Amino acid sequence: MNDSSWATPPHAGYWGPSDQGPVQGAAPAGPAYDAHDAQHTRPMPIVPDGPAVPRYGDDQDDDRGTARLSGPLFRDDTFREETAPAQPYPAAPQKQNPEPMPDSSQPAPAPQKKSAGRDLGAAIGVGVGLGAVIIASLFFVKAAFVGVITVAVVVGLWELTKRLEERKGIKAPLVPLALGGAAMVVSGYVRGAEGAWVAMALTALAVLVWRMTEPPEGYLKDVTAGVFAAFYVPFLATFVAMMLAAEDGASRVLTFLLLTVVSDTGAYAVGWRFGTHKLAPRISPGKTREGLVGAVAFAMAAGALCMEFLIDDGTWWQGLLLGLAVAASATLGDLGESMIKRDLGIKDMGTLLPGHGGIMDRLDSLLPTAPVVWLLLVLFVGSG
Image (cartoon, rainbow, N blue to C red; front, side, top):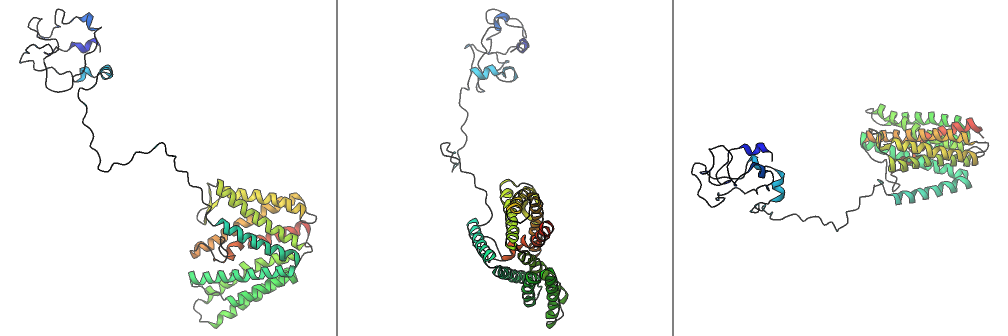
């Protein structure tokens, strides 16, 4: 404490009786206090608030009261360091059911692993099974692969029309769509683009006529949905049959399938591991920009390899362009079907394929990619 702290008039009980000392307000005389020695004396201990006890045992003056070593004069850290309260502080009330203290010896719970969002075991098993069927039919009997395309188209049309009726009350006629869709695929394989366009026109006409057998209410929306379904599923699938019709058709179709699957796999793997920035949150919250970068990188690498080793007269730089185009079309196709499902208020188009959803959930990126691959292959290496 500094000297000015001691300028306060002394109180009885600290220096003892002041009858023999100077007048009130002056420092006490004699050995009881010396200004020089005060600088070397140990600080006085803090006495807790309570009944006053005479310091030296002498009787105190009534007008001075009892001295208590408290207040601003003795608020100094040195006192707290050297002294302790004479009486312990009252103990805090105990809870009736105190919570157990964490045991530091127990290991911390392991963080939860990031979920992939679907049954990967079932998805891989179904994917391997479908791949085996496709490869077997593609390289042994081309006509069998045309049958695989036709079955996929018919099932996809059934899923789409059923969801439209369940969720929106739209009754797109399935019978003319299924027959016309099968005719489109076969016509594209046998007669090329000309046959596919003719079959598409006849299918649209059949949808208009078929719907006339029912009441006129809702006619416009039903036939509009029917024409849309005919274009979206069987007509786009016809380009796969047109690729198959070339001399190296099996290699072209394999390249188309590989690039689309690799693009989807790259987007899924990179997006699941590193994805933080949403690509289109209002349409598909699970897709990220990082996933799109993964799709482009994987598809371009696979495209360079496929064009170099699978396609006659193909070059690696053509494969890079092909892979880039596939990644773009596959992503847009996936977002397009997600838009349809958002409008219908459903998660999957069906449940036929465990771990994948329905057939349409697997065709979403394949259908819009088919015409892109067919066109680029024709430009790069010819129609075959």
